[in-house]
Length: 78
Image (cartoon, rainbow, N blue to C red; front, side):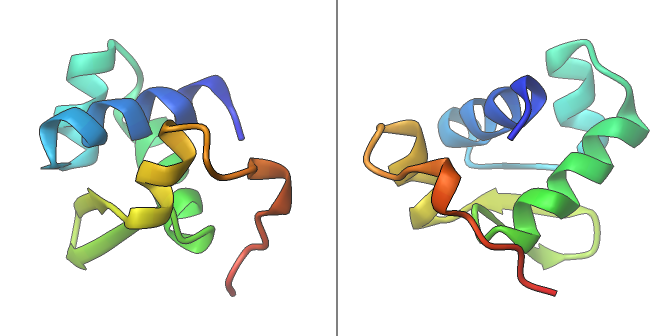
């Protein structure tokens, strides 16, 4: 987990959904980097991608933000 991962989860936790471009603009980060991190968060089960380029936070992602989920236990789904 990176600082950007936390920022992405916090953004989506309060805004419900977004594209990497919208998230990157809100966080003042690089669009491509945010896209890479969003895909990684999907592989960890913290985000879902209901349609191409559109991300939403999962229940696990919300639990992580609330401190109820330990990121060290994350296993990447391939």
